Amino acid sequence: MASDPVYEATCTAPVNIAVVKYWGKRDTTLILPTNSSLSVTLSQDHLRSLTSARCITTTSNNSNANAVADRLWLNGHEEEIQQGGRTHRCLAELRQMRKDLESRDSSLPKLTDFALHIASENNFPTAAGLASSASGLSALIATISTLYALLPENGVSVSDLSRVARQGSGSACRSMFGGYVAWDMGTRDDGHDSVAVEVAPASHWPDLHALILVVSDKKKGTPSTAGMQRTVATSDLLKHRIDHVVPARMDRISTAIRNRDFDQFAIETMADSNQFHAVCLDTQPPIFYLNDVSRAVIQLVAELNRASVDAGKGYLAAYTYDAGPNAVLYVRERDVKLVLELVLRYFPQQTFDDPFHLGPEPAAASSFVQG
Ligand code: DP6
Image (spheres, rainbow, N blue to C red):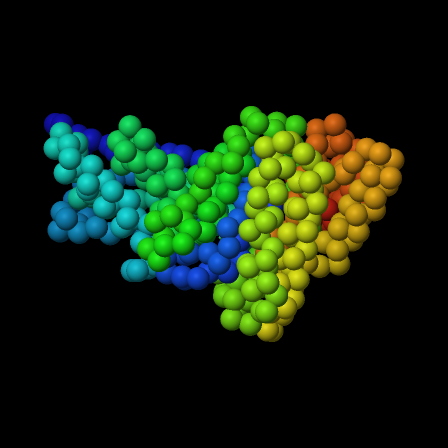
């Protein structure tokens, strides 16, 4: 007896950490941002989402062969795919792209007739301000696009896929590329030009490393999606940031990356993190993502940089914080050991084995990730 063919794919996608932050949407359905942003995609060895998807080709539990009832499991728990919700829209868009492909090439199997079962897991705490939605959504898009053969040879570019990922979670569009990635906000109302583009591949600046200091792996208080729209509605500082700060900063930091100019990269990264959290404070009611340990890490890095610059050695580290208290420090390879030793001296932790284990004391655990 011939068995049903199996159509399945598995992909991983890494976390990206923004150095120019995305915070605010001008269109909440299409997820069009109020400013461009830029991030560094981390290596997949430490923080990544892994997603598998399979076309359900049997109809035994489904009286209507054409009924599409997709199912999704996140970290082992089934999540509802809401009609018209973000995941639903991404899947609908990918199906349409596959349909276009199938109508151009009749030899292709009609995969769009089948439901999808999708399972995804993160190897790090979800929703703790470690950009899990970025890696999760981009892993989903990468997996389904692989399954559906939405590939450059079939006329689908990575930027095209980033347009779909953007509609799942804004920051996810940047994880479709490795290395140094800009999300160009675009100007069109349909979002066609709001895509991720590569500024430089990871190999361009292998000297740059990211240290993740886990201050807390608890779920964050104010989710980014809700928080950023509260800021759009209430913050005057955000308007100033959008019009007068981000455009020039995007240019300066792109140039710093192209020139591997760590000092300029560090200055822009820290200034942007500071302004992002200032904008959160300027929101009504204010949003607090940093805690006392986060602020102590900022003070330590500022002090280390001052001493290093005074000694003629340039900047030692650049901190940045997303929507949570955890710090990411960008450091050059030659300084990684020194910075880690200093962080661990000032923020001792209970165990070094598990980078996400927290002791009862405020602790900064560290994980070593190549940028
Ligand atoms: C602070 O991409 O999670 O990490 O588009 O609503 O899903 P949605 O928001 P999300 O916001 C990320 C915000 C940030 C900054 C950044 O990554 O640029």
